Length: 138
Image (tube, rainbow, N blue to C red; front, side, top):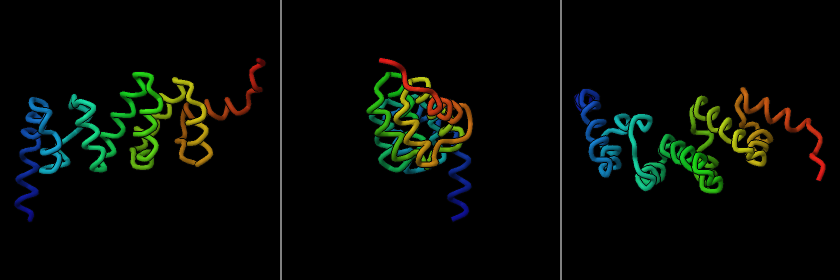
């Protein structure tokens, strides 16, 4: 088995190039060599990211959540970040939480904070400050 893993690792740049030039094959490439698919460098369609996320690829779910947040579609974003949040890296959790703060999604930030999932950093500080502020007069 060592031969297969070492030969696959030598071809990771080729897999990445192929995935970039023919993104429709990204799911197939993922099955061949999951570590070859670095979603930070690929530009995949939402449908392709959905396929990868359904294979429990948290990076794909993270990319989907960010895309939907940028499009101001908070409900769609939540479908992708909420079930995968614990699987995101610390940096991804931090970035996502900061995006939620920028979008004034205080219910979602509060959900993360109360569940003890909100990472330390700017988003957590903003949430703590938000809790201390008196309600705005109507």
